[in-house]
Image (cartoon, helix red, strand yellow):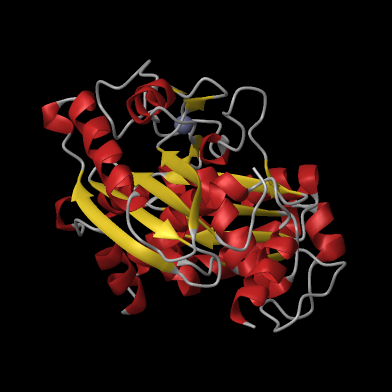
Length: 340
Ligand SMILES: [Zn+2]
C-alpha cells in the first residue's frame, strides 16, 4: 500500500491483559485511542468482536480530509505468516492454531496487515524512535518485559523470517548447563535470565522466601547495595552479553535497543554486559564506540542503547504496519508536507 499524505491508519495492539486500538496519521500522533480489557474468559470470538467493533468505530469517524489507508494488528507471537495463525501464544491461553487474520478480515470484509507484537514494536522504534533519531535503517530491539521479545528491522523492513517467526532472540540459549526451563520447551533461554519473571526467580534462588515479588523491588534492593540483588543483575548483564554476542557477530548491525521494565535497571546490569561483550564478541571489540551513549552515532561503531518509545511502541508500530513497505524517510517527507 502506498502512503499518501492525506491518509490515516488504524492500529491494534492485542495483549493478554489489554486491547489497545488507535487511529494515527503521520506527524499527528494518535488521533483517537481506545483501551479495552482483553476479554479472554469470554472466548476468542468475543475478543475478535471487540477488535472489529473498535476498528469500525474509528473507521467511520470524521477526520476531515484524511482517508483510511490501512489497518495493522500486532499480536503475541509466535505467529505464522502469511496465514496469520497463532502458535501457542503464552499470554493467550486456548488460542493455539487460531487464524486471527481470517477471523478479523472476514468480519470486516477487508484486508489487514498483521505481525507479531515484538516485530511491530521494532518497526515503531525504527520509524519514530531511536532509528529516526540516529538515522539508521537497521536495528534490533530486545524488550525485557514479562518475557523477552525481540524484533529486527533490516534495511528498513521487518525481518519476518520464513514463516513469520524470525527474531525470537528471547530464546537464544545463554545457559547451556543446568539452565532454567523455558515456556518454549527449551532450557537456559535468554528470557529466563533477562525478563522480569527471570529476575524474580533468580532473586528467589539467591534470597529464599525473603526475596521481593517484583523485578522493580529487586532493583531497589540493588540500588541500596544488597549484594544478592546486585548479583541478580550481574547475571542479567552476562545473559544479555551472551545473546548480544551471537547477534552482533552474526548481523553486525549499527544499533541494538533494550526496552521493557527490566531495561530501567540499566545501571545495574550494563557494566557486566559491556565488560562481557568485550571479552566474548570480537566484532564488538573491533567496533565498540569511544562514548557509549553519544548524541550522534559514529557510522562504523556498534551501539547498545535504551529503547526510546516505551509501552506505546506496540500500538504505534501496529499503526505504522500498513505503511511498512514505504521507506521511513519518505514517510517523514510526507509528514513534513502536512505541516507546511
Ligand atoms: Zn525459551
